[in-house]
Length: 161
Image (tube, rainbow, N blue to C red; front, side):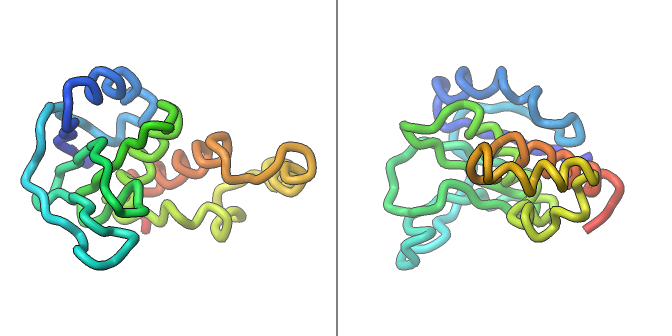
């Protein structure tokens, strides 16, 4: 099981999000801290990653709420991740964002929910998936992300890529 040091930039962020960590499967283990780990800036020119902080050390996750010009709100890979908290973000969105980046950190394709649908959905879910846009709107919602992330977490636990 992967173990991460979760750094919340501020005590307010920690108090807001630490109680929600139980929504992420226990495959991921955490040590929770307040502060800033050793970071590097991902880019000084690319608008997607402009001034975006990312942990240097493997096994580190950084959750911050800085107002930076980067368009990205999360990044993960190589057993590290960083998650940006924006003013308008709901807690449900933030915990899903954290789970998403943790999956990237352990090498899982968390961006591939739609192309991998046949691998993680039951036949009934495939039917519901097809009907969903006609009655509920886009499939890009926490309900489907949660199912997909559970699939990827199980796959990671079994050593799959």
